[in-house]
Image (cartoon, rainbow, N blue to C red; front, side, top):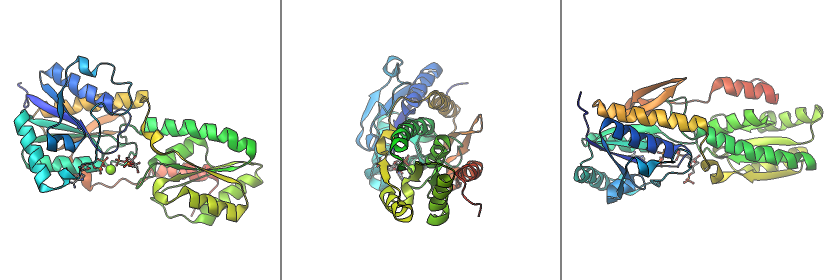
Length: 328
Ligand SMILES: Nc1ncnc2c1ncn2[C@@H]1O[C@H](COP(=O)(O)OP(=O)(O)O)[C@@H](O)[C@H]1O
Ligand SMILES: O=P(O)(O)OC[C@H]1O[C@](O)(COP(=O)(O)O)[C@@H](O)[C@@H]1O
Ligand SMILES: [Mg+2]
């Protein structure tokens, strides 16, 4: 059967995530395999608004899977949020002969894709964000690498905290989502983990676990705070006031978004890239490729954006059990 599209564009948008390059490579190589031309749009939606693009061939994506960041650059585009920017973006698609577009990013990127599709461009989204906050997918490209990057730093911090018998307060990324904080907290054996999805009872969630650990013989402590909860400095100050412990704050910041992607991210990105092109080739549009358990599936973007992703309850329960927080 003939492909429904002859030429497509691919771009990365929003916060970058390790594995985005592997997804680009997969989109390009799958396209070529299916006899579809692929153009790289640079700087997220700004590239569509301004006609900023590069042709991509087999060789131009060689060795890309192992590289962090995104070769197409990423951006948050104010211009594309307005009607005029969106019209310009569609005009660029027409000019370049793009019949389909693959956007790799988070929920904001998917909302943008809907605007393109309303104006007649076939679109598929791939979930790429270290926050793992896309509701239709149990996994997003970049999450595993970010967890491991944070964990590596926390393991190092633990050495020095142990030597000086201090309390480490580590802020991890996640303005609205605590998935990264929770997973990292479980993996590093944190004393307690604070996430934006749950109200914080400072006495029960922070002071009490520290006291219990102290009574159990521990002399150093690891408190993980998701960015969205508030300042790690405030948390540290309150801990010192309540316990007299010597605290030190580390804000991990953008280091969590960099680095060579893990095998999990490379493989997930590669599968998703393949699926995106397959969907466009079959004439499908308005789809998000995602993973449910071990299975790759796709959802209607509008439906996907209506879904809400809560914290993984099982992981949250396990975290609280192991940190000695009272059930409430
Ligand atoms: N409602 C919207 N309509 C049109 N474009 C949007 C919308 N929301 C986001 N975008 C575009 O998508 C870009 C990325 O969204 P953002 O929320 O910053 O990151 P992410 O995709 O990682 O969630 C924005 O800078 C903007 O250009
Ligand atoms: O790149 P910026 O503007 O500093 O944004 C930081 C934010 O981006 C993230 O790293 C990823 O968020 P998105 O995937 O939604 O872009 C958040 O964890 C963090 O709060
Ligand atoms: Mg987002």
